[in-house]
Length: 571
Ligand code: TEU
Image (tube, rainbow, N blue to C red; front, side, top):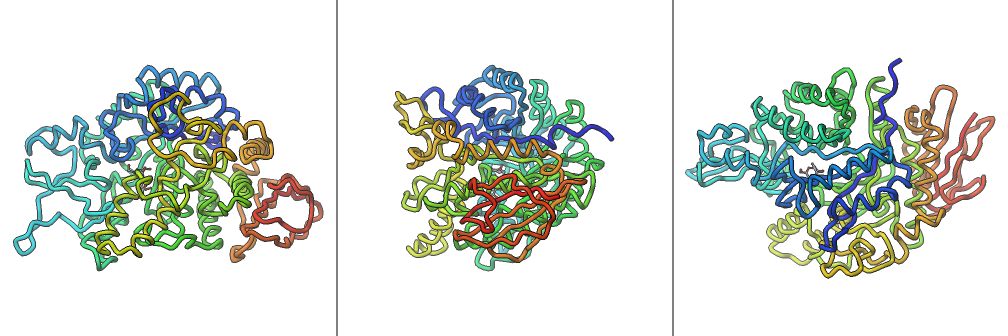
């Protein structure tokens, strides 16, 4: 049997550089801020760090619009700072993973500036250009596709009188993966440059969009709009396997790991094709089954808490099932990242009396699930969404502001429609994950130095007096204290929790999530109360059970407290 790959047992901590720690007082996080907190990160019990884009960028989409792959964004620091950071992470025995954003670049990238300059520029074909269509003499885009941030995916370019494709903002033109010279340039500039500097792998942004499928009009699902959801056409196109295998050859030379982001892919057989080891495409992916629960046709068109516990459990069961479907496949466990609202606010309760219990419950559940575990900055503290009373101007993300604009236009500024839009943003917006990390009960929540004259780029939360890293570091009963305990237990029972078989015992229960994990002779029973009241538990008939942990530190009573989780070892 070949030895296990390190990334299967990895516990990965995700950092959003703008919001992690500001070392120089300009209101924006930076690399030296990350450097100053490496011992804190290490103390949580994680062993790998994923850093979101820190590349030079005009920041239209917070660094997912890259101007230069080979240069650090100056407000974050220099390339030397980055090399020092990589070295210091390695010195502590941890690994480091960067974001690889190569479905698109910024429109300010040198490649796109050239491509745009004339129809016969050698880089014209590095992006996706198409002539206009004309309907009743009126110029219209090549198809009716709706972009991920609203509007058409096509942008008219006056200079050369053609449209270019952008699945995200107009400032994020899609690279043309069909062109092999483009692919070689991507490998060299975005991948090899940083692999040579010691990074251990990549989180691969929107990896399933490189090969666009059928470019014809998408079916009409929103009759009120000119633009229609086309995710099933532009994701998972016919050349995906070929492109990923080619990319994997570069990665293999460095023994680098990959976790690919796979939006719009509910089909588990399709996911399997990406993550089965013998396919040599990706090590693992982020599926959207869990985090998309409760979304409307447009993500925000929804009522808050529009999700049920059975749908949550089914989504988890589906991602867990990858291991059973193919022995050489792998999966991931995550509830938060920079694109998601806070998990306590979404899946448990952020009411003051339940918040800590909810954070511990989710920690217990996640630490008992199979696959590579991802923890997002602030999740380990139980940070929650910012409150409803905050003004719309606190939402900075283009995904949020575009949605609000669209509702304003479509409803003719109807106050009721706007209030509903704001409510759904309070529940689901990406902004909630992007506020400054709450480090201390101090000016700017300890994110910026106290003497700093600029204010943080996003408004810090108001609850840092009761929820901050410094206080929790010394309190074993805090959410952070519990994460440390759970991560240690996950390590101590690595086979069972990271690799074991998952079985859901009661999918339909609206109150409890009860599952078992099995590995050879070992078995664990996990019981989670997803309500704010006491629930009687029915422990399956077993000869011997041993309470491994209760998220509320309780003994072996026959009931579960509100938002309590338990793990038993069974014999
Ligand atoms: O996200 C891709 C993606 O499809 C979604 O998760 C996206 O955030 C959602 O559609 C918005 O409602 C990745 C990055 O994680 C995200 O931050 C970037 O904005 C996006 O790609 C473009 O690079």
